[in-house]
Length: 242
Image 1 (cartoon, rainbow, N blue to C red):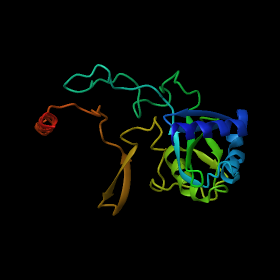
Image 2: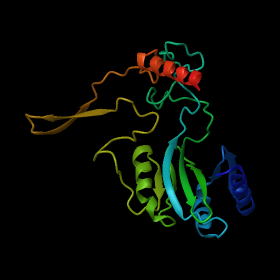
Image 3: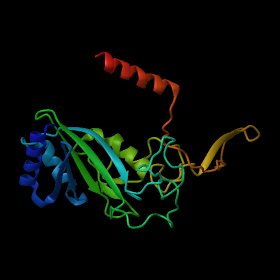
Image 4: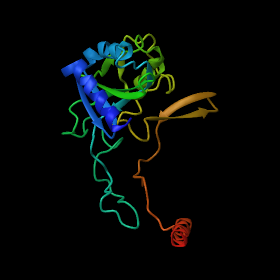
């Protein structure tokens, strides 16, 4: 959306819902934070009222804010050889629940984010709803408002463990039968908990404790590769010629 359109939508949301929504607009993107208890009423109004007409739910996903704002990598003092290799923080998969990061920027850990589209008004809106209880994260299901959200909610349940109250068939959709844990949670081990192999003696697939050793990986490295140097030289020649 344009700056004008984003500002107009934000003003309409504030005028219509008041303190029910916490509305912000950053980079021409409007985000409205809503409490779980108000989600269904707000979603229904956004879908049905002529001023909004958000008839299309584009996506729903989960978020885990555990350790939000922390990083393992020193990216500000980068050199020509790449970023630091040392573990400087507690990012995803490198701590247990007892050793989880404290004092994060978000007081609540789990949230569901819903992306809406109004074809009639050519507008987009992001709804965010936090789960009140970190030990049992739960928000209302939107399947009665936008039926197509069914599988999106199952995915967020599978990967993050967020329970969508009122969902008609809330079960895993991506992980295997009997899978333990939720792999997108930030305290889930990067190497996993178990590994699977076929045992020829038992003639069946068996599960065993994972045997992979955890290690620090380099997310990005700056290198003076020959192809990059050649591309840079060609770009300089093109600039001089024009």
